[in-house]
Length: 211
Ligand code: B1M
Image (tube, rainbow, N blue to C red):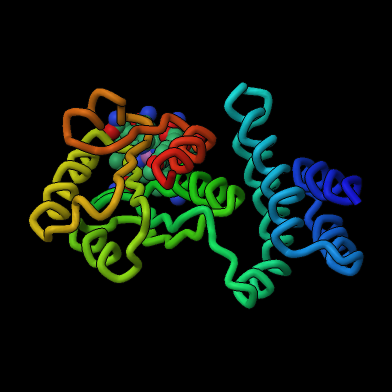
């Protein structure tokens, strides 16, 4: 039975969305649980994508195609996981900060997180500090992630952390930041919990933050 999970993982890696969907059905028909297929097939495949992306052996288009295959498998598993009440790796609210419309990197982070079993809430782009505050109240995530691609908008990350503090919510959520102009030093300076330089590292750190 391990071989069908390996096939799911390798087809996902190659971005074969139809094959992934077919294999997921087959695995379930053979009696594997949705959790086994998720962990041993989809997450295993996406972990490998993350490792090779980090190592520079895969590039953004290949990761996006793999993520599409992951979504094909998740579409089948999601209702089964919801039925069985399977806990996720954690809830992660993500958005691009106010004034910033760049979302390619943010979407990549979101897809990799989903591939790692996180439940994500995507607030989109141009998200005002109050938007993050409202989302923390509404969704009670483990982590919120802010993305910024402009030196002029990255300051919104600080404003958002201050807004969380003013709303009395800062202690209830971990804050991760990322995006091309952002650095670990900036994260430290503004009181974020973590900085991730790329989508694969964002997953590793989210796992740590979610305990
Ligand atoms: Co814009 N843009 N852009 N742009 N754009 C940059 C960012 C820029 C560096 C180009 C340049 O001048 N060389 C420059 C910023 C300069 C600066 O501030 N330092 C710039 C500018 C100036 C602008 C405008 C102001 C241009 C203008 O109108 N005069 C304007 C601003 C609009 C706005 O946002 N208000 C603008 C507009 C646009 C487009 C709309 C045309 C388009 C965005 C389309 C879209 O996103 N839907 C665009 C694009 C595509 C780019 C470049 C070319 C590519 C960005 C990208 O998607 N990279 C970019 C130049 C460049 O980087 N070569 C540029 C690929 C992506 C996978 O990488 O987003 O870095 P990245 O994400 C990585 C990591 O950073 C990290 O993980 C990702 C994957 O590993 N990461 C996180 C990202 N978010 C994270 C969050 C995390 C953790 C990790 O935790 C939460």
